[in-house]
Length: 288
Image (cartoon, rainbow, N blue to C red; front, side, top):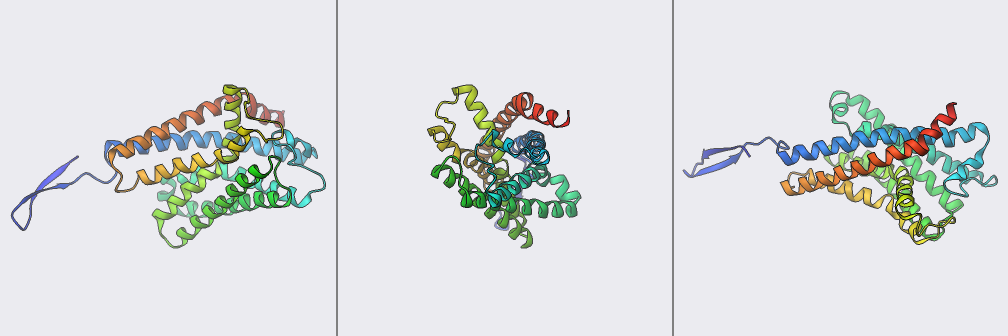
């Protein structure tokens, strides 16, 4: 790192670090890895968000609500009006989160169009609260097909979503921007959970032939997945947040960069196959 040797008042020579903050090689690698992950995630989230609108929104438009049960059985039951409203709001708000989330992470927009960032942020936080509370209302009124484990896992997910949304807004209003951005990263990590839930199941089906998965979602893998679709995301987000801190050393930044690149590879590979075999055909079928 660049250093300047200076004479102190005591007459001793001392080395002063003149390297601009964040300008180290490890810092550059971390920023680059983060940018790659955000770009790939944005593309994937946009495709999946369009699929959600085409599949679930299309089912509402066609009056064929039973199609909601294609991925998770018992989502739609004609008599449970309040629960259906809750899960419907969860899907609609979730689609907005997937489409708008990466925009909030772009420093160029934050710096050059702060008004756009603020208004998009308000919409984003509102949708996160609606998605979290909508999912929670469905669980409380109806319960999930996976029983207690899925109820707890999904309930914790909805609660964390609401908490992160509230904290993101709280620190933005307090003008504590560093803390605000940290909570925004956590919120985004949670927001992509429903998308990763499907992706994780798809990879598991290919690699392990659905071992531990049952149609009623009571298998051991289903129990793991009730938590796995969002807990690792939060761990990666926390690693990213802490590695960007002033006290993080080069090794921490380098390790974080490798983790982010691995995550980007996983998302990119999953996006390719899901777009080819599931999301793409689903979107095209809606408009064909």
